Image (cartoon, rainbow, N blue to C red; front, top):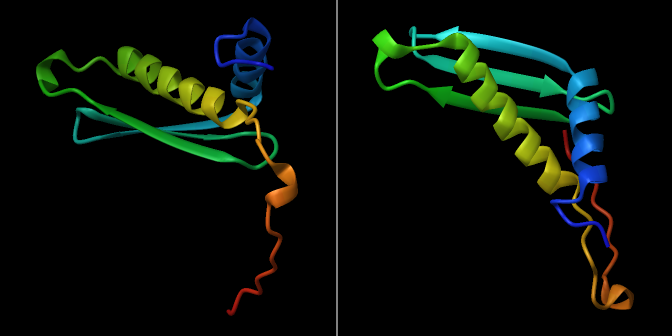
Length: 97
């Protein structure tokens, strides 16, 4: 079983992050919003805020957002053990538009 601290998983997630399309918005001179779209289409949005606009550092804020995105992806890609897979109920839903 792969755990969240597995070096292979972390390398995989960082590789996915590096290949992803990224957009960074800076708002109000102290908020950074980063959206990351992976090559499979999955989108992660993270943000950070600096309480003191005079100490605001875009590079540091982007690093914080990057770390949050990578942690999010580590949790998404973390395998899950299903104890009783035979008890999983299957169902269908049709969306009404």
